[in-house]
Every structure is written in structure tokens, then in C-alpha cells.
Image 1 (cartoon, each protein chain N blue to C red):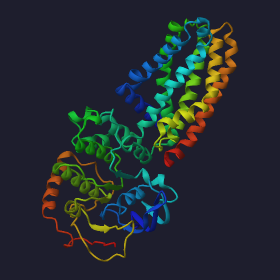
Image 2 (cartoon, helix red, strand yellow; image 1 turned 90 degrees about the horizontal axis):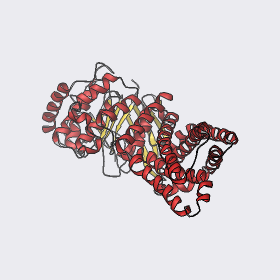
Image 3 (cartoon, rainbow over the protein chains, first blue to last red; image 1 turned 180 degrees about the horizontal axis):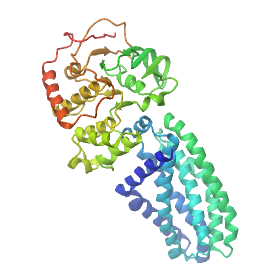
Image 4 (cartoon, each protein chain N blue to C red; image 1 turned 180 degrees about the vertical axis):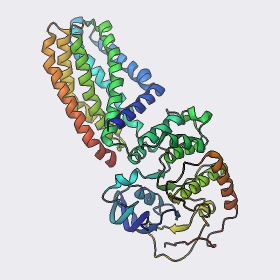
Length: 222
Length: 269
């Protein structure tokens, strides 16, 4: 399974390197979202600073929808789904590989957005370790859930609109946990954020295991 | 000898519509079977069912010794289905696509290289993104992905569609080559002269079903498609297939018309 996961992750990342969708479309979209928040809240700088953590993760989630949709569409193109089913690849491995590829793309995006909130919102990170741990755990959770739901809606003709409708409510716990952990990391008591980070790690594990087990059924059904 | 494909009263549904409504079919190892019939007859569904992609909901369905109704996944990794879609990723090069699908199927590196060489994709085309290929080149890349797996059963759905004569000859050469190495082939094609020249038997489908066997309707000599020892030898090199393709062109030009003599044929009403 791990071998298959590595193979699929490598393929998805290679496709991304060639197409540069994350770089040329998702990243600019994320920056525009950050800018719009800044325009909307700039008259009251205090609100912007207090809301930095939440705005950051809302921007991440909105951008993740694009990356997840793109990842799901990759295996919809020109018979790729049938080829996957015939390939002999373990469905769990395909799921983990796709999750890993989306995770890498989102982490790169989060670094860019992190620089954005420092410049635009005046954020001053205190707990770097907590920030990194939060980003990794929350992103794995987002990517795993997104990959699973991407496969769930892949057979639908309205998948582009259905995906955010189904996915965003499920990601609410991740949004809450990541925002609280970030608030602690950006404030004066980073230690308060670690329990939230632990919750995120638990969610990431839960979503990953559930996804690896369910992906085969979704691959067959869609 | 146990048949490679054994279907008895096989029923498959597409939604609630019975796309296969009780098909009987037995295919021996090394045979080339042409599925014939009008559009909507169930040829594509039958090929996809034999690949384990469309579930058989009633009847017997054993492919390569495995009960399709119990374990379709065990069959999938041993068959190659060339369908209407290519299964390729446009942003990846030919080389990357063939390597990816080859590694997914645990193919040997030498077989991947041989497949690229055999399909004439080992030169400049190797590093071209698939999205920039012509339809014929894309078909060849798709075939290379399948060939690298050295499948035991080839399921070819309109393999000649959209190709020029040279590419069609190449596909015919590949079929003959695969059968010489012990593979079995089921194909559907509207290029009847060409396909009948390849086939040992013709099975006709109408409205998702077939009729009692016996009435010969068409036959190819299938002479280049005689099986050798299963899995024997390496994948042939390009020169080998070029020669076979040339022979195929000759055979094709003198192929018997439907109803002419040759191998056994099965007419299904």
C-alpha cells in the first residue's frame, strides 16, 4: 500500500509541476482572498489583527477546495478511473497518495499565506513550533477529507458545486481547532494551543484511516 | 483445458437497463474472438464485464479461472482493456504515463522499455506530453501502457477507430504478437474485413444477448495468431512487429468476406 501511495503521490505532484495550477491559479486566488479580507476590515486594524487566525484558515479552506477539486478531476479525465481500477493499485494506497500530494500543495500555499498575513495583517508569530505542527495536522485532515469527498462526488454531474457544500461542514472541526491553535501561537501563551493541535492530529488520523478504508468502495461506486 | 472466458446466461445491468441480457460465451486460450453487432448490442458492456468493470448480476462468469462475481479485482490485474478512452494523463509525457501504469501493475522495467520501443515511442515522442499527441499517437501510448503489463487477456474495444492504415496494421501486428505469446483476445470492431482477418471466430450480439451456436457467419483465418507457450519470450522488438504488420496488411487485403470460409463462427440472433 505504501509503495502505491508513493507512486500516486509522485504522479499527482508531477502533474502539478507540469500544469502549475496551484502556482498560477490557487495561490493567486488565496492571496486575493487575504487582500479582500484586508480591504474589508482595514478601517479597524484591531479587528483584522484579532481575526488573523480565523481569516487565515478560511482562506486556506477556500483555496483547498480548488486544489481538492483539481486532484479529484485528475482521475476523472479520459478513462483514468477505469485505468486505476484495472491497474492493480491498492485503493487505500491511491487514497493516501492523493492525500499526500494535496497536503504538500496546501503546505506550500500555507507558507505563502503565512507571509501574507505577516505583511498585510501585521501578525507576529510567537510559537513557531505550534504553528508548524498545526499547519501539518490540520492540512492532513483537510486533504484526507477532501480526497474522500472528492471521490464521493466524482460521479455526479454537479460535483463542482456539491463538493464545497458537503465538504465545508465536515471541515468545521478542523477550522475551529486550527484557528484556536493559531490564536494561541500568535498570542502570548502558545502552550494553550497544543491541546487543539492534539485534536487536529486525532482528526487527521481518523479521516485518513476512514478514507483509506472507504476509498475502494467509492472508486467502485462512482 | 479450462476456457479463459466462460459466460453462461450472464446478465449485467447499466442502471436498471439490462445491457447484457443472458450471454453465453466460451473462449479458449490463444483464441481471437471478434464481437460483432449493431450499436447498442452490448459489445462494449461485454468487454467491460470481462474486465471486471461492469458487475455480472446473474449467471456464471469465470474469467482466467476466477469467478468474476466473487472477486473481480483478481481478474483486473491480469487483463488489458483498450476502450474508447485512453486512461492517460495529458500533462505527463508518454514516458511518464507508460512508466506510471507499468509500475502500478508491477511490470518489469525491461517490459516497459520494450513496450515503448515496440510502439515506436522510444524516440522523440517519448518526452512529449500526451496532451500534444495526435489521436493515433495517443492510441499507441495507451497500448504501450497495456502492453507493458503483459496481460493474459486482451479486451479491445474498437481498436482501429480513428487510426490511419499504418496504425491499424500496427495494432493487428500487436494482436498477433500477443496471441503468439499465449494471450487471448476479445475484440469488437466495425472494421469488419480487418477484424475478421484477425479472428478465429465471430460472435454476434444483438440487444445484449446471443443465440444458440452453430450458424457460421464469418471467419478469419487467424493464421498469424497461433499461440505459443504462455508468457514465453520477451515482448517482440519493433522490427519483428513491423514485419508482422506488413503481413497483416497482406492478409487484410485478401481477407474473406463475411460468410466466407475460415475458422468457426458463431451467429447469435
